Image (tube, rainbow, N blue to C red):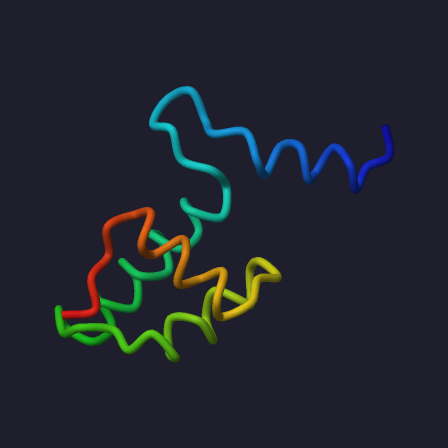
Length: 75
């Protein structure tokens, strides 16, 4: 297997501890940190997307799929 294939495989396998993938964990971490910066206010999806793509390469549509899966509502 190439390193890229291994990374892809590791990305799709959920962690045994909590069932989150690496991308889901990054999204939740970035969401939490951004909420802290905004003093608890809601985080606009565009702002969240801009910060998440600094860590992982996903499209805006993929972010929405992850947010739906994680139960993050847009209010």
